Image (cartoon, rainbow, N blue to C red; front, top):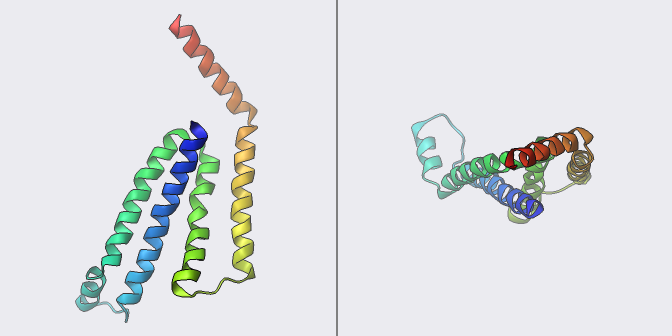
Length: 143
């Protein structure tokens, strides 16, 4: 149950974060030229993409808060950066932005970091001790 919750939760978080980033990109492109004026603000808020960005950030916030209730903070924080990979890939597809070697290496480092933190969290003896103590306390209080 927990693994499924984490998988679905982080996929939803990645989707909301990706929506926000790509929507900001589209809204920014549509509102060019960049200038500090009321006309520019009207162009920005006249774009439906800016509202996609708001939806993405609000959805990501609530998803993140739900995940933090249950997920260990180290792997959760690392996994929350998966949108960097999805934004990079979708920017290539949607906007024709080029992906070079440094970006690919960076994506591999993100994935490796998530794996390392997840494995270290699973092997954390302090967490197992605390979990065992909490379980023992629940068992003792139920009798």
